[in-house]
Image (cartoon, rainbow, N blue to C red; front, side):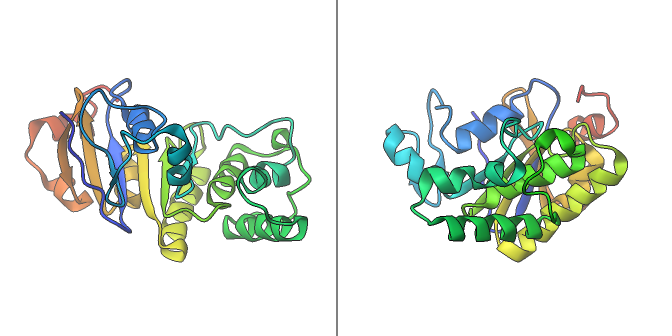
Length: 225
């Protein structure tokens, strides 16, 4: 089985090779998938037996930044960010617009509300995706391969953003990635997912100093990423 404890307020990165189930694990955490057995405790509540209507209130505590950003190409940036606010709140238009501006400012974007996603760089699209994920203030923020497809400059900006939001919002951050360099920079702890189980958990310093052959092989690329 798979056992993993995520501590409140920490930044935990789940590493593993392609096809090991890292993204599946994120979907289990928010109840989009159900395990065949076991429990998933979110703030002490087992979400596995919850019906869909109760899962909705659970998901409002969690923001998910999708791999590839997954923006709505037919909507301008402002409406992408406002989407959850329109779906799940009774806020008036002024409050929605103010919140959109607030979260875009938090991710370092200005004067992009009316732009289409296609007009943005990959790094800017990622920031919009993060703004959308925090529009309904989350307690937990999940990032699915946040640096994939970005150039080195934008990778560094995304790392800085993850750390900045953790500090400013006090959120628990869970990052899924196969990018070891980014994982080491962004994490309080790292977990290695291998063959359906968490093979190791430790701080970046512990992971780099370990003599565990599986971890060392993954770090130097002998285990497929």
